[in-house]
Picture 1 (cartoon, rainbow, N blue to C red):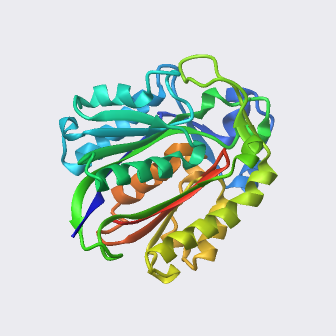
Picture 2 (cartoon, one colour):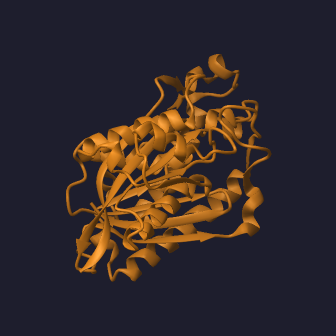
Picture 3 (cartoon, one colour):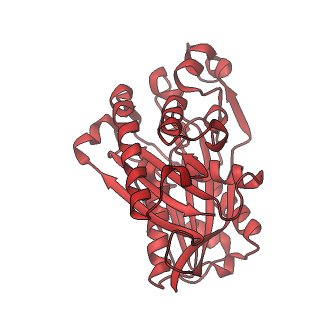
Length: 326
């Protein structure tokens, strides 16, 4: 028998304020149209954080929902890992603020910075910590307040992003050590710093204060996205002796509907087996995968035993995939 990190609860949080494409001009002075945005990205609206909302407050709300759905109390948590590119402050880590809010006074908490791939990175770390016995119950959170690092005069980037948080609860369980086990089967992480300048924030970070602004060479990012994501998913399947036909669900980073559709086609999945939230959430960076997972699980779409692929690509460049059985 081997130790596996099993997903027992998923949660999400979205700010109350919703800004549709047509309302961007009134809200932020963006001169563009719903048709222009929708045709290029699939995005129709995004959620925008209120002034008092932060990465930690949204992440805490998502974590509480995930724990509630798991039937666990915060005191049971001994590891909190937060993926964010918009932390509350340079330090302390956003994770320790969430740890305190959960009432988890044991174990440890820390942040991970890998942009839009951050949740996959954090999931991989939590899986390793549980496998080695350093944690028994981990909360992994992606939370972002991208509205505060956007240049609202650049319609090529500002229309793409939204705010929100998603979380999963992992607990240690036993498996046979093969691909039939429940839980995280494997994670596969990559980066290539040669492409760091095609997607970056040109200054400091901290969702409570002054930040740099997001800059992106969109065509360059798109050019890398599908090939790198397809490669890492193939890597994950090969590592577990599985085929594309074994995949029940694709839960991708929600950056662009064209990329999502291309990945679904490469994997031979019908559209109803690809979780899509980008139309309503826009790109919430590290929060997008756990938000999509929480929505699908909350609706009862994903059933126990279903094989899921979670994959993303982000600034760095970073990219990765996780293979998990729900």
